[in-house]
Amino acid sequence: MRSRSAQQGIAFIVVIWVLVLLAVLLSGFIVIARTEMLQSRHLFDGATARYAAEAGLSRVVREMLNPDINTRWVPDGRAYEFDFEGIQVKVEIQDESGKIDINQADETVFVPMFQQLGLDVIEAQRISDAIIDWRDVDNLTRPMGAEDDDYDAAGLPYGAADVPFTTVGELQQVLGMNYELFEKLEPEITIYGGSGRPSAAYASEFGLMLYPNMNAALAQQLVAQRRQINPADGTGTGLTLPDGTSILAGGGGGTYTVRSEAKLKNGAKTTLDATIRLGGAPGARAYSILKWREGSAR
Image (cartoon, rainbow, N blue to C red; front, side, top):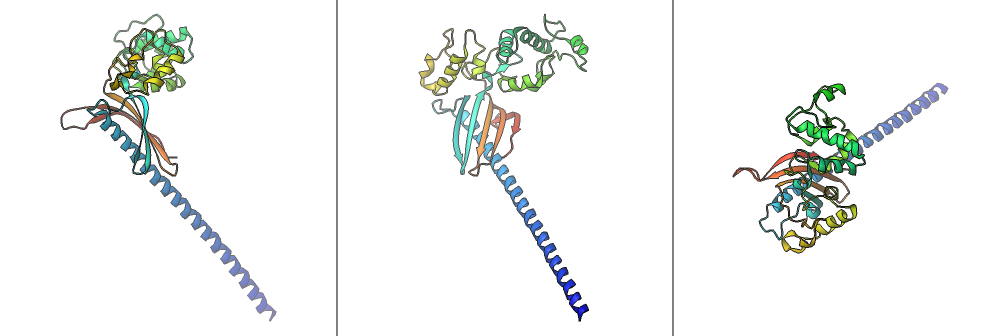
């Protein structure tokens, strides 16, 4: 009788342990299922936001090709917002002519550019000369510049390219340049500007500071006022540089940097940064992509 009771007790304990094991397994399955559901939702939100951001880029192309100058969007960094199938999209457009062209600028632009970033005039002149030596076709070293022998002395496995920059990122290879400095410069520089000085019609505050006799307060004021007007209505003629030149006098170059941010109602969003050039052969795409970088949904 006692043996039978002992067997029943052992069986009861085994049943309890089996139930506990099943409960643990079930909890694990629930956690896995919930995790997979959240991952799927994250991927879905990310894809939705990404395609909405791409829609923002397409909208920019359409608006920049708008033949009506009164309603055409202005590529001076101002923001435009619109709804795309319930998703809030914000785009900012800047004409590349409003940036500093590292293939065209000279020391009168480079030196104050680096000084704005905190370098003293000697170091600013040194990197300015090194940039010009990198892109010019000769092997003559500027007073504070760098040619092949200087790169070799610095232990670098390459020398000055002696050809124009082919990408903005190539600037990091110039002797004296570091990533921290480049990271600050990257939004302000280009190889598509086509001019030695950024166009005041599209330049940021940083770019406007490269004009003679400009100060930070005036640059900030001019950018804020410029973004409130439509160049077609003539009200911007009173906005001038310190020398009296209208800041709207310069024309664009047809190449633009576009930042498109799409935000879902649940807070997920993604950002697309692209550099595009409008136009092309008849029957071809309305634009070509020169640079493309996507952010992540979060």
